[in-house]
Image (cartoon, rainbow, N blue to C red; front, side, top):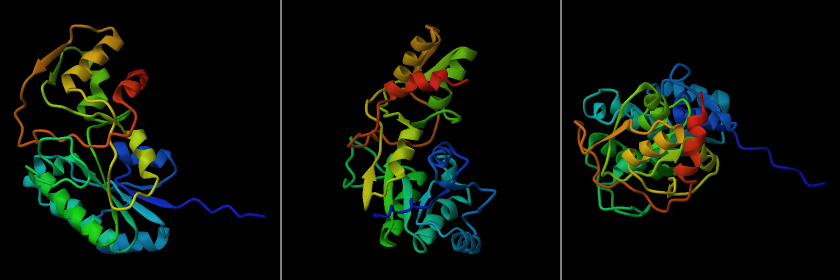
Length: 254
């Protein structure tokens, strides 16, 4: 009689975040910052010895793009921690479209040209993880229930009143649970996992406005008072389901 292989044990850092939570729902073993400070290498070794995972999906990050330029924790979390872990266990680094600038869309093999500290830190982390035999999956513009970013909160914001949304910047909103499903599979080297369908945050919010029957609440803005951002960070190939399919599900969430 044929024997079925046991499912791989996948360990997730940053498990309290939007993506980490989605991975835990799919059966991964999650560790949030209270369970593991990824900057503490001895603690990392103890956890890996205890858990003995087949693979780690590294979701922990200091993802405040502008704070990465000045926060003293940024290098330890965004670079040193994933590279150290990749030297101990097969590791998939969740990286970002911010390693690129423009024009896009960018393929996995395209030249990286980050314009801010966050993107530069991810470039260095990618190189270190790959050198250790790990994998890199780039994504961007995540949204889903429980997220605290703009696309995740668009329904809440519209119900509260007027919403100002950025126009003129192409985005590929990506449903966190779709990305989690992709990450449960091991993909060698560098790959991209991004939602199909391009839009802008203004048009994203306008679509949500229509679905909720709250027309007239969205106002466009052409620029935000923030640090440097890529002019065009779109990724290819876009293989995950479109945001237009997932947005109604988001808006149905209480």
